[in-house]
Length: 186
Image (cartoon, rainbow, N blue to C red; front, side, top):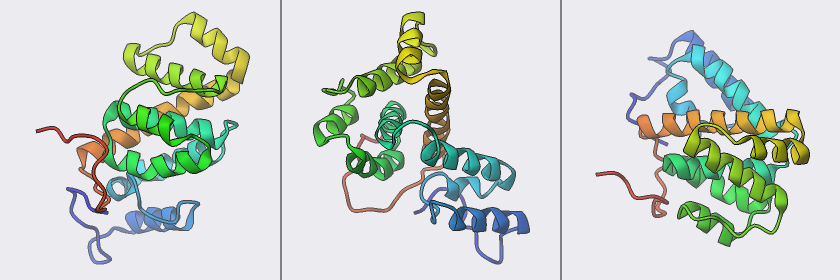
């Protein structure tokens, strides 16, 4: 991966940067894919952010299929190339189908057969469009997921919005041959 930030090397890294880098590489991710390439430049941000990310990605009460759906809704909203490239295949393996993923990429409402998927999508799109969710949608979400899981879902949306902004601002590029999922702004 590359970004517009200067590359950190053993000679230029601080002790705190090295500590955070080692924690990320030894954690469940095992790599610097995503925002970590940028965040390691600020170890004070990187350390708690990567811990929050590990929780949001691996430890919430939501099934991976729903977490990945929320991540793709976020990647599409922010037009985050690397976030989409990283998570589209994970979402497919977690149970979303190619038709749903392609509809999301195009900014269209996917064909959902599962109530929980449709609800996660509605929460994310309403949250991003209005910066809130209606009382009716809130009540529906609490009834289906429970309050703790809804809190976790909002955390996933918030964390991955931070990820998307980081990837976009610092032009983090996966350097893959595939076409980009979204048009680049001029």
